[in-house]
Length: 278
Image (cartoon, rainbow, N blue to C red; front, side):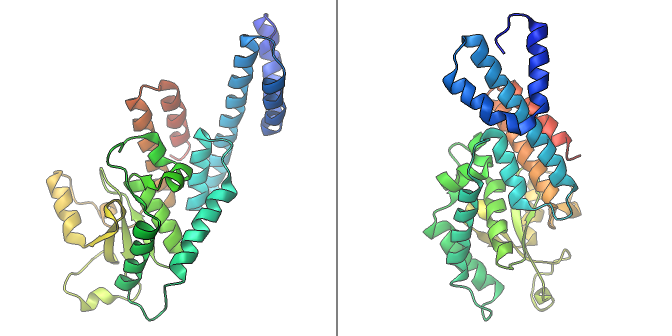
């Protein structure tokens, strides 16, 4: 790895890359315990990143071709791009604890509004999740592990976490991919809107703004939001989007975030990851 001949180094690099992720622990051990100068250290670091990035690409393609496209797994995968050593079990345990606290207070006799009110109280008041208005475009607001740790996020990450927990509780809450925003839709499973005053042609009972502590609103507010932005009313702005669309939006947010701080290398890599979902 420290050979001054670039041809020798390149041959060694390619052979190690063929080992894939299995080579990473050995490379990390060598980086920590063997020292042959800065060139050696830098080459080890670069090679570890190359292997990890190749592994993320492979796993993202695998996720994209899977039939279920699990939202939690997709979000963990994107977080592993920035935090390759993250503890997946810790993430899942944190979500399970949140789920359990909400589940204990839900019952079948409650209305959809009552269930969301309970959900909001535990999610926003007890666990203190909130929108990060001070550092809105910070990259950390897009990674599920840092959102769970800091209790702060952007509209997409808060909605993603909210919907993952809600769906695990059999609550029909899904993401809606609005321009410049992201909200949630509580689907009208029992056609309750037929008896209400506000009709929704998209099968939605009501919408939830997770970035605003779970505020409930109706279709008229989305219409007004689009009007204010002078954007055409498209069906996709009123009904749930796919999990693939959510992960792509997460990557879009990260690309913008790293553009803002001038990290062109991460912008290039994240753009490549996003292209794998097209």
